[in-house]
Image (cartoon, rainbow, N blue to C red; front, side, top):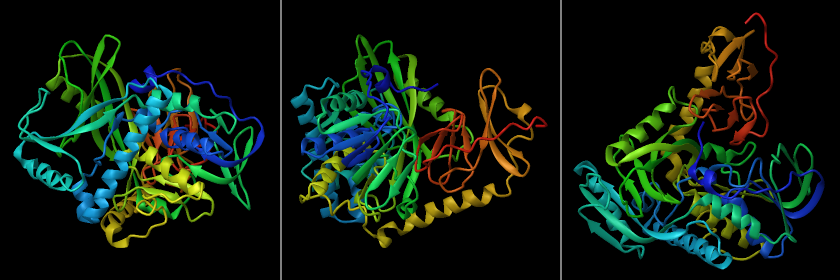
Length: 501
């Protein structure tokens, strides 16, 4: 089983499950960094708020992230500059740095023990094949008040052809930050509910959110769910990927703090350090793929471990985890009101979600309080950018179409239930219908339809995470069919076992 170092070391929360009907100004779906920071700011402004989290606070993507905070972006500032403009790239860098500074202020104001610290960010190439990437980022960063230092080597035992360093970026334990911030929220104005997944939003004059045992009626709703719940046209401009991480406990070695990004194309990785008591860890992160479109998911953990042991004196791999991210078609997140009146979105963060999540909360707080925000037009959720989006839009949506087409006639993975080993899941065809069948360690079969409840794509078994993953829009389900994440509201439909199989 996989577990992140953040969730394993952060304090636990104990908020109640929603078991009543309540009325508020703003309902927030999702208890990660976006939702909790939004709840904090809106409650502070006097709004009546309810936050609904499907499981535990910071139990989703925030708790499975890198814990890194920076002004740079996954696709590099020079890509933003070339696709948009120097002015836009500058705004992206400044807005993200504003969010990092805001996090630091919250940590200081509320004395949040989350290991927040300022550290340098490094970008390096191992061979001269990627030196041009470094040179482009040097040229771009010079425009955005980022002090860039060129280096010939790094304070890590890794080969370096060319490198740069940017000071005053940051790191923290994201789960500790989110959970402790949740405890600081004004309880008079905000109620937080855990283990309260929303399975339907009724869009009338007011918005009614339904859970298994309660309802919330709200004037406004924020979907802080990483991707919008339900069906939105915007989902054609969001592309779901997964990335992997390990935390390797070290036998020896004093590794300076920092965020280290490797530009090598075959298996792009980033590295950082973390200390827990007397133990020192190096975190190695990388290897991404479209959700539900791999044959061997475990190989990503194996590759990360190989990289860790290649450079560091590793005692053991204590933690391993993966996280989902959604790449936006035109390179920028979508933040603001959706085409559905009074429903607000924050999505398309790519792998830069911790910083963008807090920035989203700042923007949404201003919008819901009828205040101008200098960044809101830049990230507007309703923007239409066909020229900037065209290449990714066509490529990614052809990929989605391919997933639908290949699954219609595809032979099932197993002809009978007996072929499924304990701890394994396979798609089995039963009476011309595809079933997602999981056999637990006790040998009991758990059968459900293999058709994703979002938009009817066939799910794929993820052997590393023990989950059913949708290759079309990124919904993920537990081995027993319950929703983990993604746009799907409903679990996979249960099926009764056919004894003849």
